[in-house]
Image (cartoon, rainbow, N blue to C red; front, side, top):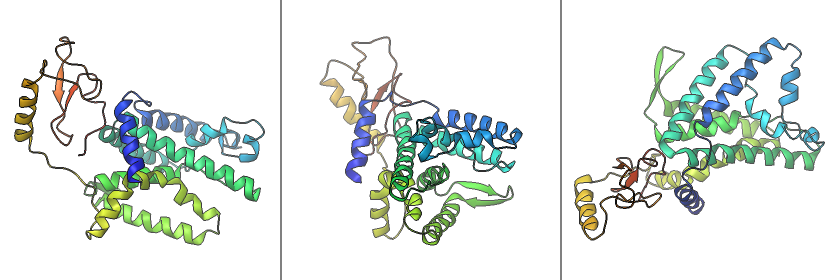
Length: 281
């Protein structure tokens, strides 16, 4: 998993414009529209038309491979809170990872879920009811791993660290796998494989040290700044973007800045300062 994660980082580094910016906003807005229309549709025609159905997909209704993503978890008013919560988590993850990496995370979870549903149908001839619950759960686990001490108001009253909510969800996750007959109990595991790809090596190394904590690197910026200035004196330019390679000599019209969230002292042009994969080593 560590090697695959590095390959993802390299792909994002080479293709910083890959993906859909503000992806979670589009998903939430479309899901909200489907939720509103479904409330007015007592016959559930729209939901039946959007749901994941392998037998109908094989007959040509291929839009179901996409539309099942926008089916809400429920038609209650609590769904509005759900939409806001996961938009907040998704937008935070995109700012942390960059657009390319966040898109890969979301779409890999969707693709894994679709593959599982189709394979189970071809083997058992039974349609599996799949949705985005476990895809969102993997996103929640990722957020809790990156920001374990973030506090949220449980029931709008009780402040709780998000890591404790993640532990409860993890327990429910394990229970769902144990309580569901094989092979249908594999859906939760398959749907959050993307989480283990992104964080598996960190979890293993952290567990061996007795605690689960996402690795962050502390940077001595004064030392790195002096090192960067020395290297720049040996070159014909002052600033060079670590993503596109453009320099202030070749493009004097560009603005260059250093990223405080990268490990090390890395310079980026104005087009990539907010759209790049952060250096971790």
